[in-house]
Picture 1: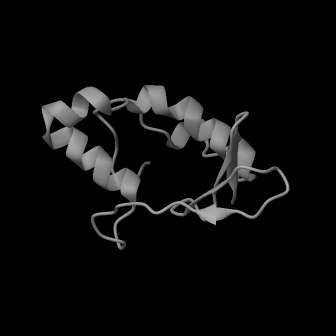
Picture 2: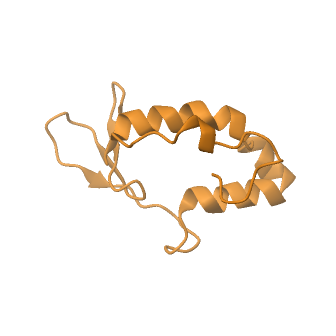
Length: 102
């Protein structure tokens, strides 16, 4: 999967999602953007989420999103990436979720 974002000065590409590239010319080469990572074996989003959960200063910059708020984004990415959607009956939106459900 490739995600791209463009503005008038440059374009950015995530491919794979853990590798960021940038180009300034629409026909130019993609150049890797060096990222400072804690551990290459840990996905950055997971680490940020954990840090935001544990540290109130980081939390103010990266607020946690509830599952109810997340579901529309999951649906959007399922559609964008061509995944089969998770049946509504399998989604748990409360803390009283049943074992074995997502």
